[in-house]
Image (tube, rainbow, N blue to C red):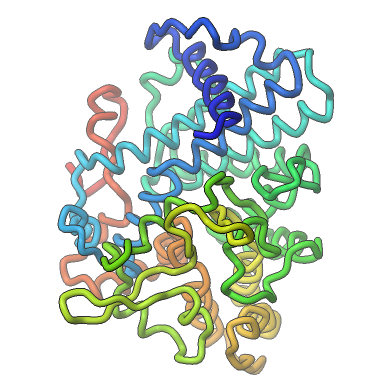
Length: 451
């Protein structure tokens, strides 16, 4: 772990220890900073918030959970026998990786809550820094809840560090969780600066908050709001999708709105998909996915790569090229938000409002970069929506489980899954609430199909 991130980690850990003192008793090392001093000046408070992002770059948040989403959808297969349960949608409540994902997301939420409580009582920070850090903590909390609610449905809504309120918290309805997400992002968009305070795109700015809010509004079916928000980001004029697909996932690329910093220049997701020398990828694309590409699509050539296994040819994700440390100028950061998604959000919302002309104009921006011919603006609504869905599938595959969430949003999950997975059951649309968490908290009910 790089030294300055180790400092962030120690501060963040101390926040958690202090906040959880009624649950656990841990003596802080003598060389750590007292928790009451974390928000005494700009630098220490900034370090505490920076570690929220570092936690999101962990194995279960930025890596395994999106891979699980891809396997439970129609995107990824696996040669890892222990992970066939995801491909077959036969997950048990005792599933260890999903338990870890759940806990990691809540750990980051708890850290964001601790930051917000610390900032609320602090008088040692500059006004500008306090506003920025509040906005970032709200953004990160909303981001985590977005993935929790889309993977598990009703989840405990925790907005405090008081364990008397959180230890036995029941599940909160999806609508209420989304209301909190939207409130957090609205607040964050008002507090965050337009610029990137680190010089790199690794901390949320105002456009990141608005971009995530546009995604949320699309997921909720609020088409007018989704159009207005995505248009703000697109019209900001500082991001562009018209670059080579080979360059999209590089450090601080022009389309990037938010990325997760990695000092080594490679991502855990890239390390997962890329086979070692002379080996194979454990997570190939499904045949159905690969057949969905137009043969002339540059994204197929740039973002997928063939390999041989058992005498047959398969394809793995090649969006990230670095399996280990990168050479100078080719460093990669984990992509969180990028401008191409905003065009897709706006196109889908336009299509739902019968504005196919503008929907196809947005799709054609991405198709131009992909080397594909423009779509005709005479397309009718019934044809427009499938074109939007197909373009999104070809653009955002393996990115934070987008395909899994899109199938939910479009109402096509059952139809698609029944076609490619004969054993599909509708109750598999949500993952099981981890049994170990239910053992600790008897107020946590289980999702249907996992009793």
